Image 1 (cartoon, rainbow, N blue to C red):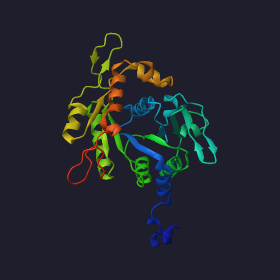
Image 2 (cartoon, one colour):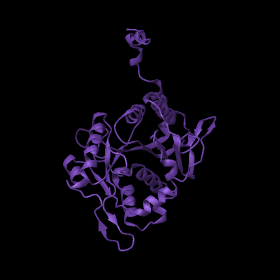
Image 3 (cartoon, one colour):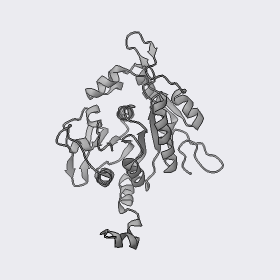
Image 4 (cartoon, rainbow, N blue to C red):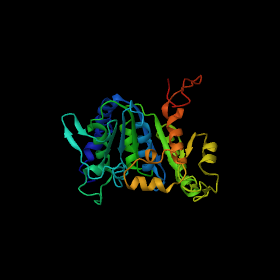
Length: 303
């Protein structure tokens, strides 16, 4: 009673699909692979992993890579990628992303803020509108990989990105965890979210999996896997464990300085795990095995 939208809701017009979904499908038709990076809890290194996954994929100069940051309230990608202070420019074909290298483009709301310290105090609808603009109005061009860095949790941004990408093929999600049970509890919720919205899970990465001393190379358990860590969780849930990235203080320093850890310390144990993840069949989709029910066991999509 008294709601100004009462007649509109009663008419059923609001149940029609958002026309932007089809527009986004058309816009991203030139993007071969789309990978979402998710985590149930903040502070597990999701943005760090997204940035270094993009760097690792872009090390192949024949590939075109883009990194989209949809963490509206906590955009850390500009700092990690060494792009703080950069601005987005408008062209006839839409917003132009900011380039780290010739084959690595980045887009984040951090480029639209006047200061890195500005707070984005938005409700859900405005966040959703911003994500829609990123997908529909950015001139991505032809891409081999679009990596989407999401905020922690299972709320507005996650529902929006899954809904807006529903008209286009999504390879799936890589879920970031840390070894302790407090983190894994939230990761299980994230896995359940993916199952409910029918988002394929490429695999799980255990971040901060032990500390490797840069000098003596000994490993210490900073976050003890009291319940078996991500390895046992993946075995229980029948999910691939893509890799276990050790904690290395040089990773944090590289992120703060906006440089790629993989090129700074390419022979480190953590860099080797990143390369193994990138070269895995689950990320590159090298092989597709099909069950009799015509479902692909790697990407979970019907042939």
